[in-house]
Image (cartoon, rainbow, N blue to C red; front, side, top):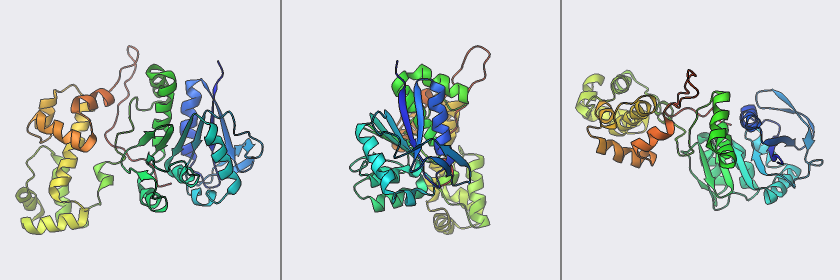
Length: 336
């Protein structure tokens, strides 16, 4: 069987993990031939200073025959968009490729090539506004860790590139192979694209004053407690109206929305890490009933609690083998 060719595009100032993470996933699957291409063959400096020797420049690698084109991100992506030879090679390779993908801000190169027009895409949360502003024909979704729209796949920052690569392997070779690769690389076995890029600590601003910090600490310490505005105001030593105003100003969301987000994450962890019944988790995490938890999950995550558990719970390997533990909503690396 002929190996599928995966072509990675890099440039000066690329994010090294955008390349090495997905590259290892495909290599570990054993059914791919990975090549790396840049404007020129030779050493290419990453954003962190790591030098990668690239065997192929755009003038000596035929863009035909690429099965999957993967464009990485990094701080140098803006300058790379001005590289006419590189952009021409990306456009030619994409025209014949079965799939086109980007990691993090690599989406800017695909957008510059006109490959994202009319499509729903994602990128690192720190650059989604720029992408939407500069390419108004692109439908930018800032929340998911990766998005598939037809033959085009886009992912958020850094580690999301490995999730994307695992999804591509699963699409080609099946779930068992993707899970075997994940176990070998000690990755999360199932982290579908619909999972959010954000945890509460990242999604919201940090409190700037001690009274609001006290209220936030109380919420995180016991998500299942009542946490009405009067109770939080008592923790903060402020009047309810004053806390409402200060909390919203400092964190960007009102207390009720913040409490709900913390409770959702507590329920996510409980569903992923244990066998406790859904109704018990709902009560413990402050949702009162399983139906309230279900409605909140559908509104915030687009899935039922039972489906979330099926996707993210620990998956046992061979007898006696350690289990891979999923996390709730992880940080997707530094802005690229």
